[in-house]
Amino acid sequence: MKVKQVMLENPHTLHRSNTLKDASELYKKNKVNCAPVVDDNKNVVGILTVFRVLEALQSGATFATRVDQVMDTDLRIIDEDTRFSDICHLPIDRLLIFNKQKQLTGVLTRIGLINKVHRALENTENKLAIAFKLNKELKGIIEAAYDGIMVVNNQGLVQMVNSSYFRIHSTTYDPAGHQIDRLDIEEREQILQVFQEVLTKGQVSSTRYQGKQQRELAITASPILDENNNLTRVLITFRDLTELNQLKLQSARAIQELKSLRAREQKDLVYNSRAMERVVNEALRVSGVDSTVLITGESGVGKEVIARTIHRNSQRSEGPFIQINCGAIPDHLLESELFGYEKGAFTGANKEGKPGMMELANGGTMLLDEVGDLPLNLQVKLLRALQEQEIYRIGGQVPIKLNVRILAATNKDLEKMVKEKKFREDLFYRLNVVPIHIPPLRERKSDILPLAMHFLDKFNDKYKMNKHFSSEVCHLLEAYHWPGNIRELANLVERLVIMSNHDIINTDDLPGYLLTGKPTVPIRVAIDQIVPLKDAREVVETELIIKALREYGSLRRAGDALGIAHSTLLRKARSLGISVTD
Ligand SMILES: Nc1ncnc2c1ncn2[C@@H]1O[C@H](COP(=O)(O)OP(=O)(O)OP(=O)(O)O)[C@@H](O)[C@H]1O
Image 1 (cartoon, rainbow, N blue to C red):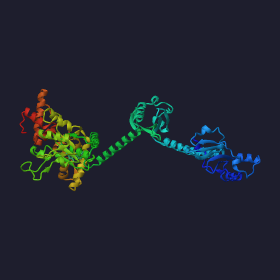
Image 2: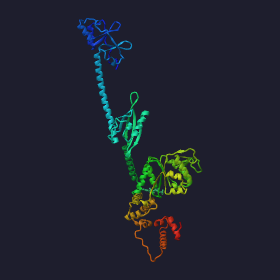
Image 3: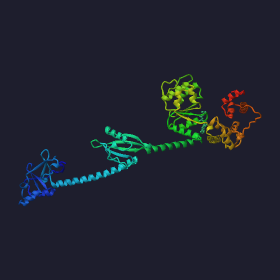
Image 4: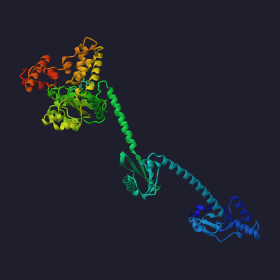
C-alpha cells in the first residue's frame, strides 16, 4: 500500500500569521488534528498539531499567539508514492506528503489513518461478505449441476469435484488433492488427454469413454482464464450418456412398435404368423434407412405389399412410389420406360421427349418388380444409375441427378442366375444389400384364415353381399397348399363370393382340387396279388396320373392335386408312357 492511499488528501492549511484560535477553529471545523503551515508564497514552513497547541497553551501561550511561534519546523516530507510499510515507524502526525512536483498533496495523521483503515476494513468486510455469498451461490450451482464436475489447476492438481461426480462414478473416492495423472479412476487416460489438450491449445476439448457394462461418458475440458487471459484452471465435466443411450434405445423401440402397430393396422397387410411378423419387422427396420432391399419369394406371396410397406414407413412416404414390372414390358421398350428419352431420340418417340420411371420416382421409392427378367444390357445401365445416382435419358447428353430409393423383387433364384451368367454379379450384390425373403403361404398356415376373411370382407363389400364360410370350408382352405399363394387365395375368395348360391359358402362351392387337397376319407388301395414293389409303384402312379389328368384337365392343376410341379408330372407321365400334351 502506498502513502497516498492512506494520507489525508488536500489538507486545510494555516497561514503562519494565523493565531492558535484560528488553528483550533480549523481543527474543530474540519475534524482534523494537524495542519500544515504555509507562508505568503504557499511554501510549507511548518506543521501544527493539536498536541503541540495544547503544549504551547500549557507553557504560557494564549489563543492570540501566532502559529509560527509554536509550530514544528522540523519537517518530515514524504513522497506520496512511498510504501506505507516503509514509513509506519515514523511519528505519524507530523508527516507532510508531497508529489513528484514538490507540491503538498496530503498529511498523514493518526486520526485520518484510523478513519481510513476503519473505512477500508468496513469495505473489505462488505466485499468479503459479498464474495462469501457469491462463493456459496457458485458452490450451490456447481453442486446442482447434473453433470459431474472436476476442477483442476494448471499444475494438474484436482481442486474439487461436485456430488454428481460421485453419482456418475458410483464411488466415494474423492480425487480432490490428487494429481490428475495419478487418479485411481477408469477413464484417467481420457481425462488426461483432454486436460493436456486444453493446456496446449487453450480450447475446449472433448472425448468419449466407453466403460464396462455399456457405461458411456462424454468428457469435456474447458479452460478457465484469469483477467489477463492466463489459464489458471481447467474445468472437466462428465456427462453420463448411458441413461441417454438407454432412453434413445427405448424411444427407438417405441417408434418401432408404433410402426409395427401402424403396419398391422394397414388394411392391405394382413398376417398372423410369426414368419410374417418377422418379415414385417424387417421391412419396418429397413424403412428407416435408405438402403437397397431385395425382396424374394414365390409369385403372389406379397412382395409388392412389403415394398409398399417399406415406402409408406420411410422418410420418403410423401414422395412417389413407382413400380415397374421388368418381366411384363417388352425388352425394346423397357429402356425408355426406365430411363426416358429426349425428343427425337428415335422414330416414333414422343415429340417432347418423356421422363422415365426412375425420374418419376425422384424423391421417392422405385420398385423393380421381376428384376430377374431385366435384360443384361439394361442391368449394366441400371447398375451405373444406382452407383452414380444419376441417369441419362435415351438420346440425352446431360445427366439427371436422382434421389431414388431402389427396392427390387423377384421370384427367381438370382444367385443361381448369377452362376449361370444370366444375371450380373455386381448388380446382384448392389441390389441384395438387405435381403428380405417372404415364405410361401403354405409355410405360414396361420395366415390363411385371416387373409381369407380379409378378402371375404373386401369382396362382400365390393359386390354388396354378405357371404360366410362354413367351418369345413375354413378347414379346407387351411389345408390346401396354395401354389399361387395369396393371389390365388384372393382370386378364389372373389370367385366364391360371386358364384356361391347361398350366404354360407360350403364345400360344394369349392373347386375339386381344393377338396382333394385334404382327403375326407382314408385312402384305400385294393391288392389282389403279390407283385414286386417297383411294378406296384408304377401301376399306382400310372393310374393316379391318368385319373388326375382326366379330372383336372391341365398339367398344372393335376400336378397341384398330386403335390408335384407340373414339369415333374410331365416327365413322370412321359416315362410311364402316358400321352400328354404340354
Ligand atoms: N399380407 C397380405 N395381406 C393382404 N393382402 C396381401 C398380403 N400379401 C399379398 N396380398 C395381396 O395378394 C396379392 C399378391 O400380392 P403381391 O402382388 O404383393 O405379390 P408378389 O409377391 O409381388 O407377386 P408377383 O411375384 O406375382 O409380383 C395382391 O393383391 C396383394 O394385395
